[in-house]
Image (cartoon, rainbow, N blue to C red; front, side, top):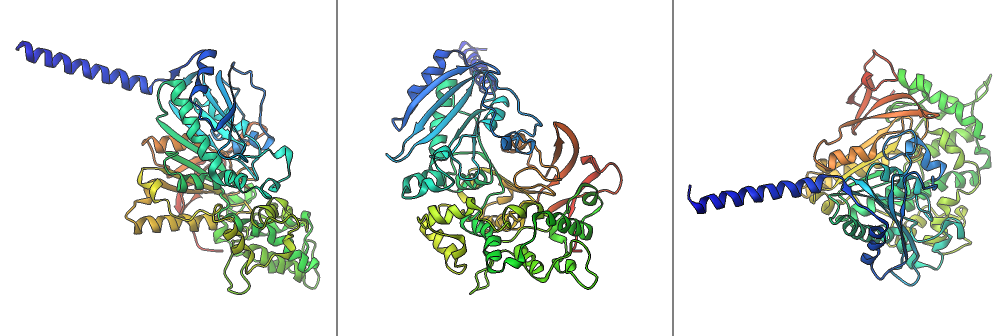
Length: 531
């Protein structure tokens, strides 16, 4: 071997070793350090970030536990029954001001040690106005650098959507700008603190957070590699109209009113008519899409029995399940809730205003504090609201840019949610069709899961808890595309049962043997015919 060839070989070995060391460093948990390291990250914030602070927080020191809603097992993004205590981390807080009217309170939490090399952004609920600290705790405990914001307004200073009255820039922040700018700043902080960029970035949200997730995927496709969107109210104007629909119906005919306590007997009748062995044992309809139950079966007749319904109440339920329609065109504005979800109806069919929905039209769309849901013109007002808000709260089924770059989107919703899963199924199918037409394999980046018996984002008699973060990480990292997963039901911190959950259009069916409380007793199959 010549001297030249020997040197060449040694150089090749050195380069190979260097590459291996660099790869190992990139995959190894990051070890970051001190209060000075923490304070130093502020140098990377843009001039649009004001009031910035950075403080090293010791393990288990944080007392911000989040809301009861966040602490529910079904809301735990790692699928855990309880919220883990915080590890040591660098807590960075600041206010983003893209415009003089803006004030987006933002926090970014950076693990002081054991960083898994990844970044997580989190969505909000309802009208936002607060930071989801409880969910941030869960992400941090899983080793992620985590960021969240309050959508640009403080819920303690004003009710619901009132912040949007006469404040177009604050509405713009709420409509998506807040999350995007948070993401940009957070990624800079991550790179500064750890000396390298995050290898993967994920976003998770449900309800409003689910819509925020879709907005991120479509309008800011470079922000995240994987996105989990639960029960996204899309388009928001149509969904909020569906929430207003029961109140409007009752105003037209108060005789339609059904006492809240009567909905349980309606659900029981639907379960008796349509549930399989598992649903009957556990209290829900396994697949409401195949349920042929009709409210007229409960109509009071001669020799009426307790729990029967008068003609007006039967009509009310029929109209509720159908959902609002444009009276001129007959076009369905948004599908009504599925059979078996009657436990969710009381808050919408009490005869009182559901303010969370009314505020969208009152403040965001029509900019009138005097607007009333009872004046809704079903042939004009939903379209007018979408026009006045310039489509900011509607996400068309066009995810081409996100899917082309290898983005992954996991959708989920519960069958017992007021939000009918059929709406999300239709949106999923439209994304698939548009992808096919555009030469994109949408299936490689899109999955939808519908959980039997789950209420809005969590709760209900069904299994509602699953590892959203772990499933997305496995998929986005190229290890496993989710065709099914195991969902759990916890009560008082204890595991009650588990169930297999299958990617749409398949459904989980009981094999006929084995415990109904074990996921191994189920298999993924095609949905059956309506009963």
